[in-house]
Image (cartoon, rainbow, N blue to C red; front, side, top):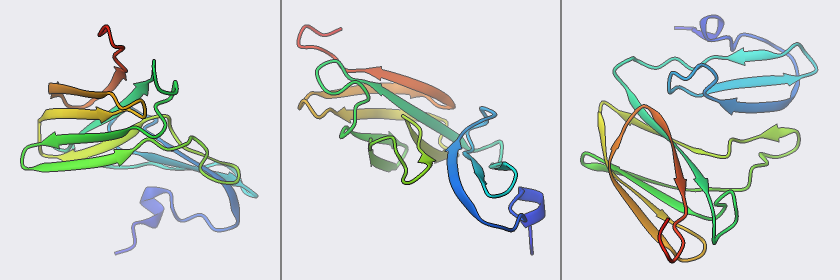
Length: 143
């Protein structure tokens, strides 16, 4: 079954620029492609029953964007770990300053653990799904 037309992926031609983001706030990542042809949007489609969590970091002792921090999201019987990387995605590409976790049917996050480059370990429990979560690095005094 060919769904390229429906998804917007039926364009042909060269491209040199791309970026991804959840442009419509539905929890599904969308892809923007540009370059030698008009701007193309490949819109992500997810079942409404799927849940997600987007994590953004703000370093206080570590670097401001939390680059190098490792984030582990525990939801139900599964866990996902990702590392915050530099924001460039390559030549003329762009990446978000956040990490996106697809949670499927899990409607609650048991815990989010951040291991900051400074060595600080931070754990949040009972986090709601379907949101952008900003985590600010705690100082020694605990903010």
